Length: 454
Ligand code: NAD
Image (cartoon, rainbow, N blue to C red):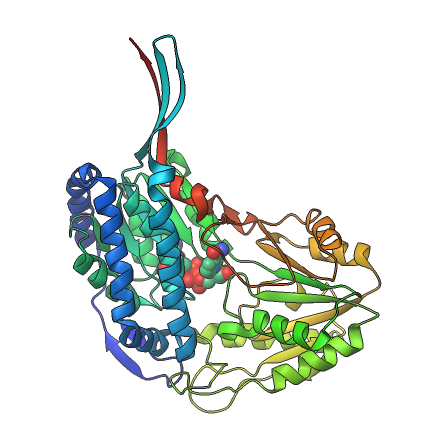
């Protein structure tokens, strides 16, 4: 399998893909290793994963460069991602004892009732390319902490990073028969669906997530899905500093070239501040530096996958054909690399794909609304439910609006952020189950109830 640099279209290297025999071999290794790993005291497992975080720091520049070369993310954003992953590991390891220890629920007249959080066993993690460190860490760190063995399938677009993760985990002390990497694309993913894993944890598109969910349903094991979004923002009429709000929300829409599951994908602006907001927003977007992502200072790199160029281009063409106005960008950049100009569309409607289908690229639609009620109606008009945000001077007003939106995360005066202390979950087509927080630590366990008399 060739690994392509999306900024230059050059082949970086090629890697050997797995097949049925090699995957079965890896699976058997994990089956043997998991019981031993579960016997390792939790404190030691925590220490191993903290060493992994230290190694991420020591190898920051090298791994950021590898990440940028294969996914096209600007170098500083690759560094940010790896540092973000270290922060998540810090929270997860510092809280593992608290949430994975046995819970004594009752002691009464010689009867003790307690919950023991047993690991699921061998879990399968099929992962995405857009934040391979972050979405990987969400799964394999709590899974390993809880005593599971992990088969990790990085996306075929971030294989080199997946192999680096494996190298550093092993160096940190994760035994070879506790963590294995499945190298390949959809066909390798399919092989994993046929093996008897004790849980499936998927990050990726709704289409693949639905397929996996249906395929493994008969196994009666947990299947968690972190899928796409069409995340809305509402800018209310009482926002104070329009320039700052425009800068923050443009970053929320265009960071990582819009290839974030929780990227701002559509914006509704109260008519009283619409002109001022759009003015500042467009100025901000026109100031973004597009270029080769390994060069310092570049903010917009290429898209990671070539087909996404065409998808985004079609969304823009369709919107314009239906009456949208281009306020910035709008087309591919000629020459090598999968570059698309950062694009702002005005006069959009919900009849356009750009306001309904996840763009996953540097494109945003902005729509004028007359009041909060209209904003809520439009924000709710989606099959997705990952995040939603409100910018307003009033926390009460924002919480009232967010309370009416069927999404896993609500933001007031911020957007496009994830916290290790809070559950990360999607609703409707955005997913099932939660990672991160105490809920995400326990997602890799099965509770056993003990009634102990005597
Ligand atoms: P994708 O669905 O194309 O692929 C995800 C993974 O599934 C890859 O490893 C791929 O090889 C594998 N796969 C594909 N077909 C398969 C099959 N038939 N059987 C088994 N495995 C299969 O998604 P992607 O392009 O890698 O990621 C982008 C999507 O992920 C976007 O929709 C984005 O919003 C979403 N995402 C969500 C979150 C979240 O936390 N909610 C985080 C990151 C990305």
